[in-house]
Amino acid sequence: MREVEVKYRVQDREALLVALTARGIEPGPPVVQDDQAYAPITWSYGDSKTGVPFVRLRTVDGRHTFTLKRPADNALACDEYETAVTDREQMHAAILAMGFRPTVRIAKIRRTADLPDGELCVDDVAGIGTFLELERIVGDGVPGAAVQAELAAFVAALGVAASRTDETYDSLVRTALASA
Image (cartoon, rainbow, N blue to C red; front, side, top):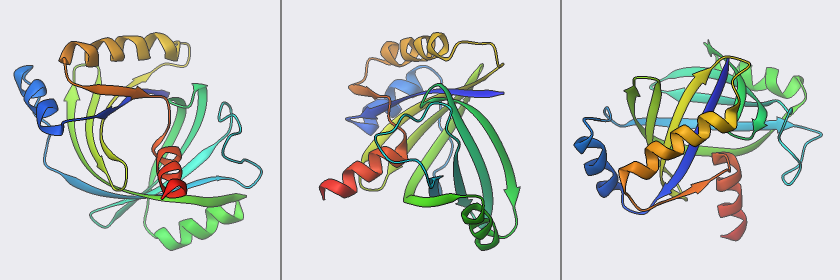
């Protein structure tokens, strides 16, 4: 399966929440996510991400998840594999042994809402601000760009001040850290 998403930097989180509530969308309670991103040793920021596997270790409420994403159409339309892990440190060591290196740590507070055909996330990401993310899981033959256009139309219909980004959180956090 593939995960296809769009991501928007939101100027006013409260205005976004009001717009969502007006559509009957009520994001759930805030959850703290602690993500460590990894890239292949041979990959560098600025290189294409398409076809390259990236991994993440996420901790939420003491539970750890390992995720591999491989961008297919673009950085936000990825083949995705995910599983729970019991020992974050052992998984970290295994990831390093597989030829990955840690890139950035991403701390965020996420509120999610289920949509009829996907998931909506309101993320407050440490150091870079508030974001709206819409995600949809699709079959292998579905073009990511077409799904992203549908998701973008939904965001535009909300009528909130938001600017779309094609960057992943790891790239956005890395850029913010480099300019600090």
